[in-house]
Image (tube, rainbow, N blue to C red):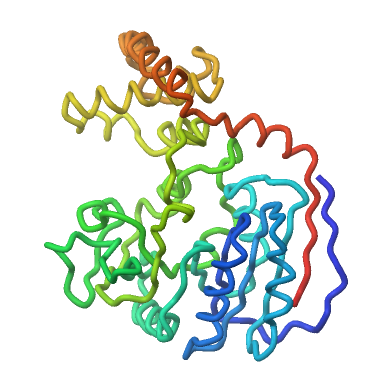
Length: 333
């Protein structure tokens, strides 16, 4: 990999308190809405790092043409080839300068008081085992994406990381500490791997404050990132299962859920072109329970159905090709 760092267009301002991280692939129109929401923030001490994953829709030119009246630093990191969110996230994580970080999808945008709210809440907690703050997101119809409508927590409560699944039903807005990611990386095996594959390593012994305060709007239209019909990133899904579900957790599942997770694991491994022996050793559950190899045969039915319906996109093949070709350009706007 060759990294080209462009000459800075202007000197960077003082160290920002927050780093806003956005990976993007052909999201020019959505990025403009996100940019405008950043301009409208009440809290101004932040930087925005954009990871452009090989876009060909003139996303950079759009950002450049709308840079007027910007009071924060923008670092634009562009890949010559599509390398995926996992790899791009690893790159932008190494370029952040803030104390806190906030991820934001390229098709989402913040409410004006978002950063002010999140900073105030995270600075209330100084315990060594505190991981960060999780706030509420809504869709464009103001429906909660984060919490069940029948259960929205009080204004704020403190929750163990392993208990978060009791409260969260979907995506959220999180402010966390940059230092936790300095020595950690997402697995680079496919264009996408679920964030839980890394978060569990970092936060298994941490506590989070969750709040009902709404700070971000997340799109769920048909052309948004979250709307997928194809079966993609199967190799990433297989690795995510192996990283996030250990033997103790597997044993807590009921029989139906055990069956589902094992069959899906084998299904993702087959679509992800992982050798059966390698896959068996990859995940401790199937490594330690030889009879679960039987479910490999059952998964073949679902693999056949997937292929017959032409719903599988083997994204890892393009990932493996591009990872040997890409170049990175960094521009400070």
